[in-house]
Length: 189
Image (cartoon, rainbow, N blue to C red; front, side):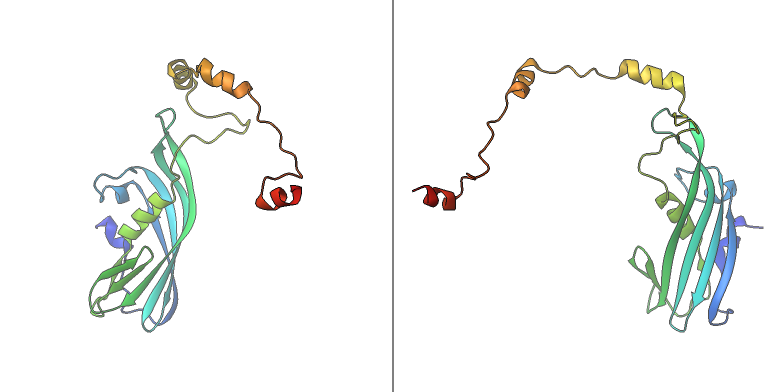
């Protein structure tokens, strides 16, 4: 059986109203997408479908974890994912992506493949900079050997002596009554 078929929802046979689907994203899911940053994980996707006369509204809730690479130390770790996303599907003359959360499909369609949307949503739930979370003591969980090497290789901030001399200069304090505006100049005359 094709694992990806689990993510195809045949909506034509469904009555108008609300429907629930529980999908499980496993390692096999990521194999279908070339150049995926994610390869391993286990995420439950709760999908709520509100089927209406002229459109369908999909609400996704994700909970689980995916394996990622730490941007600081380069080691793999399981990153917890939790989040919600929405997708509005309307009927129109041809397939078209209206916006990030709205697509148009022809009225002849009878099913929708949620796999590419789930794949995209999982990536959107990742932060821009992925680093190990702190442990219960508040210390980083990154590899200490790598952190030590990074500290040794990082450039030391040598302050240019010309800038250091400028930082010692202080700007003269302005008289709060005299703001230097045209009004205060007229009043002085």
